Length: 206
Image (cartoon, rainbow, N blue to C red):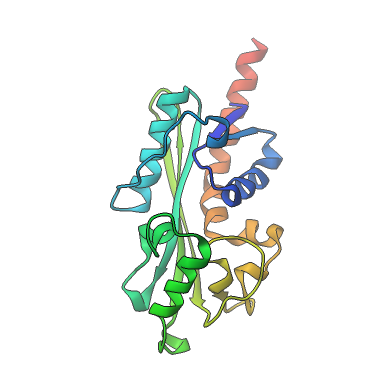
């Protein structure tokens, strides 16, 4: 396994995954390299269901090893919303700015101590033979009262980390890629990826 397809067209996610894969020496492709693959409807009832559907669909269409994730923001005061609807919280086609604007409006009047939230990520590694592995990551924080910072994407400008005193959008990519929900999930899969790379190398040497 020297090549893997990341089942996403989100440039922010692709950039993060590419950085996380760098020390494995793997070639990362994305759905931007497969323009004929249609948009995959995320109609699952959980992050894991959506990630598995994307991974399975892309593996079947490409015949490649596929990495897929579904991630989002859960806010305690909103009973877990936006959850699996994070990317379209303000409606289908909504951009990050509109989603953040809706979130902050929904959080108006909520005091700081009740603004707890968590980023969650479900990650699936899917092989063409149908075998797959899953893992998940969770990142605790609070919702800021206004966007701060210009780095990252999605809800990063309003996700405040108490232990650092910063929003995610104020972190360097290197720091974010060590401690984020996606990094936590990916770290659990890294050992498996190393094993697969080793198998590929041994097979090629025979």
